[in-house]
Structures are given as structure tokens and as C-alpha cells.
Amino acid sequence: AQTVTQSQPEMSVQEAETVTLSCTYDTSENNYYLFWYKQPPSRQMILVIRQEAYKQQNATENRFSVNFQKAAKSFSLKISDSQLGDTAMYFCALGGATNKLIFGTGTLLAVQP
Amino acid sequence: GAGVSQSPRYKVTKRGQDVALRCDPISGHVSLYWYRQALGQGPEFLTYFNYEAQQDKSGLPNDRFSAERPEGSISTLTIQRTEQRDSAMYRCASSPSTGTLSGANVLTFGAGSRLTVL
Image 1 (cartoon, rainbow over the protein chains, first blue to last red):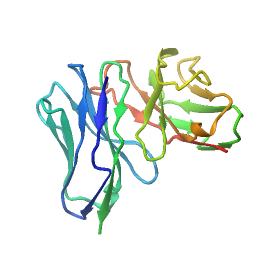
Image 2: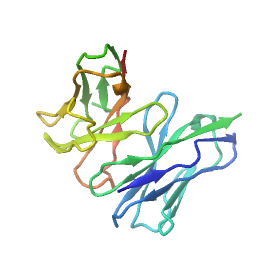
Image 3: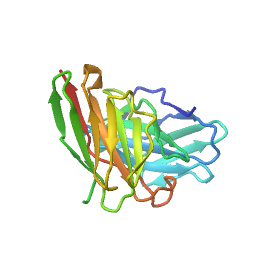
Image 4: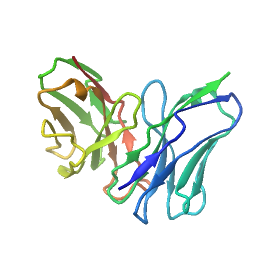
């Protein structure tokens, strides 16, 4: 069975600082994909970043980057130069051959002015 | 359309009533997914379609839940004889192709339908 664990229910960061959100997962598939989704107060689900497991290079999207440790099954999200608009719930998700995404329970990030 | 459209945005119903939730995917998207998200939790897979064919319904909680996509575009999730435990946000998502979620095949979510069963 596939599982996703986010062990940090809540985190807080000062504006302009850097924060890292943790995610671990388990899967028996060799080819899989990892995602971070953002859910702001509007409750939309917005794709932040995606990592394909066969790629060794960590994905980067502007201020967002990941630290993908395949052997450790770890997939953390780093947000640099945090902005007030980054305040949201962040979900880590795992997808495989079936495209059936498995989500973690989320981390609520508050960016403080 | 430009995005995934879901209706109604909010639905309040009494226990025992049937509800139908509609999803209109991005034009041309062939895969369509339904998820349910309880308050404070991550989305949980319910079912998905490739074109009009329901590929996997393993996440549907029981036989009161059903979904269809008769023409391979709009989909309807129906909950019969609603119960209070069915209260949640129901989210639809679509993707351009049936392959894995790599490259241009990105899953796009709608804003959701919030169901409250009294």
C-alpha cells in the first residue's frame, strides 16, 4: 500500500525567511511521482511543484524547491523568501501508475509579518 | 472551459435526501477524478474516469455513492440517502491524457463542492 506522512501539523515562519516542510512516503512502485499542493484560505488546490522519481535532480520552481531523498523516501519542500501569500495548508502527494494520488494530512504554514 | 468547474459550490441537505454534484472538466481533458476532503484532512480518492469509462471506483465508500461520465466530458457524483458523515468537500480534477502524471499531464483541481448534511 502507498502511504504519505506529514509529521508537522503546523509551522510558522517570518516573512522573507526560509522554511522547510517535511514529507515521507512509502510505495512499492519503481516509477512514481511526488507533488506538493497548496491550499490557501480560498480552499483551492494549487500545484506547487512536482518531482518524477526517476529524475535525480531536485525540482525547483522559483522560490520553491524540493529535497528528494529516494533511498530515505523523503520529499521535503523548501520555501525561500517566504511571503504572506504563502500562508496556506500544504499537502504532499504520491502518484504512481494508476494516477490515483495519495495525500498526506497536510501542514498548515503561517507566514508572519 | 478555462478551468475545472464544479456545481453547486455549496449544498446543504437533510439526512436521507439524494444529492448530485457536477463536474465540468477542462475542455479536452480525457481523465477525470473525484476526491473527498474532510475538514482538516487531505483529499481522499473516490473514483476516476478515462473518457466515459470508469477505471477505478475502489475509493467509493459504499453503494450509496456512484459516479458517471456518459459522454466523456461532464461527470456527476451522486450520493443517495445522505448521512451526516457524508459532509465534506467534494473535489473534481482533470488531466489532459491517460498517461502518468508527468510532463504536460498535470492534474488540475476544481474549487470543490462543499456538502453539509443536517
